[in-house]
Image 1 (cartoon, helix red, strand yellow):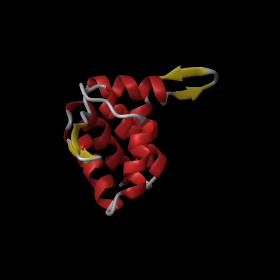
Image 2 (cartoon, one colour; image 1 turned 135 degrees about the vertical axis):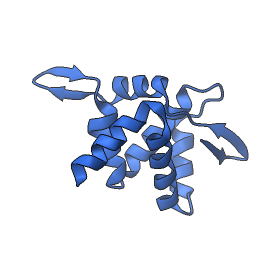
Image 3 (cartoon, rainbow, N blue to C red; image 1 turned 180 degrees about the vertical axis):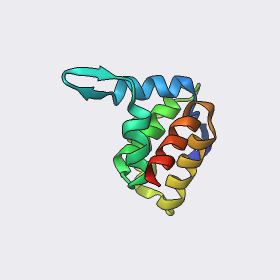
Image 4 (cartoon, rainbow, N blue to C red; image 1 turned 45 degrees about the vertical axis):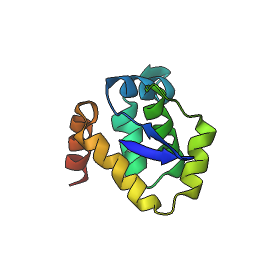
Length: 114
């Protein structure tokens, strides 16, 4: 996925490296133990519910694995100034559902919603 931020085009990839970053930054904790279920248990439900902080964090983590990196502040500013925030949420969720790393988690989430 590409986004133009501050006049420059940046890549955002939702692959295995992204999932590793999510698991490090957003683990699921149960009884004092941390589990690498951040994508399925936190990111997808929070994006579906419109959590703007999660959107910004997810974009940051998806850019962190790429050559040209953005700061969290750069992404926060981009999200704050975004003219169509619903479209940005939809775009990120679409990318997650089409990536090999996110496809199964998205499918399971949708199944649980039914």
